[in-house]
Length: 315
Ligand code: G3I
Image 1: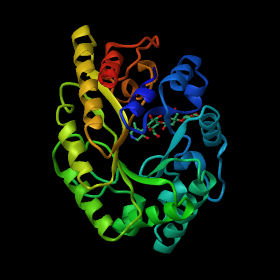
Image 2: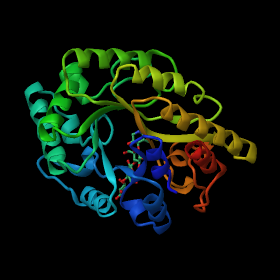
Image 3: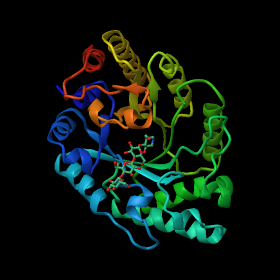
Image 4: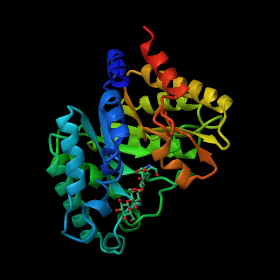
C-alpha cells in the first residue's frame, strides 16, 4: 500500500514529494513517485527565473511537463513558488518604483496562476519572508513595497484562481523563537484584514538530533491559527559520517514528525523534499550532512521508510 493511500486512510489529504524534469528523467525516481506519493511540488520549474527570466517572456515548457505528468498519473500539484527572494531575475531585482513592481507582481502571478487555474491544489504564494530573528528578509519586494507585497501577492493569486488553496511557506518554524513568533503575528494581521490566505507551509528541513523534538508543539501552534497547515519540504539530515545508529535515530524522527501531522486535525499532509539521498539538495548545499530521505542512493528503502509505514499502518 502506498504512503499516500495510508495517509488518506488516516483522513489526511496526501503524502507528497517534489518532482521536476530531472526526476522525470530518472526511472527509479519516477517509479517511486508514481507508486508512493499523491501530491507533487515542482522543485524548480515554477520559480520566477524559470518562468519569466526576461520581462514579458514566459517559458512554461518545464512546468507544463510537470503538470501534465501529474494529471496523466492522477496526481495533484502544489505550485511553488510565486514570490521569493531567490531565483529572481535581475530585471525584477532592479525595480525601485512601487507602481511598476506592483504591476510586475500582479502580471507574473496572474499569468502563472491563471495558466494552471483549476489544476493546482495549492500555491506557495510567498516563500521565506522572515530572517531568523523575525524581521522581514531583505528582498526587492520588501525594499520597495514593505509588508504590502504579501497581501498584494495573495490577492493576485486569489483573483487568478479562486479555488486554489493559498499558502505562506517558511523554514525553521520547527522550534520556538522569534521567527515563528513573527509568523504568528503576520498570520493574525493578514486574517484581520481578510486577506485570502488558507494555509501555512512549514518546510521542516530538519537536522537529526537537533531540531526534531520540538516539531509537534510548533505544528500545533501554527494550527492554532485555524488555517490549514502542511509540512511542505520534509527531510532530516544526518551529520557525516552516516552510520546505522544515526539511521535508526532518523527512523524515530520520521515517526515523530509523521505522527505530529496525524494528531493535528488541520494538518492536511506531509510532503518530502526528495526521494533518494542521491538527488537531495542537502549534500551539495550543506556538505557536512548527508542521507536526509527515505530511500538510499541505490533507491533502496531505508529503515526510516519502514518507520513511516509503521506509523501510518497502525490502526
Ligand atoms: O536546470 C538548470 C540547468 O539547465 C542550468 O544549466 C543550471 C545552471 O544555472 O541550473 C539548473 O537549474 C538549477 C535547478 O536547481 C535544477 O537543478 C538551479 O540553478 C538551482 O538554483 C536549483 O536549485 C533549487 C533551489 O531550491 C533554488 O531554486 C533546488 O533544486 C531545490 O531543491 C531548492 O529547493 C528549495 C525550495 O525551493 C525552498 N526551500 C528550500 C529548498 C532547498 O534549498
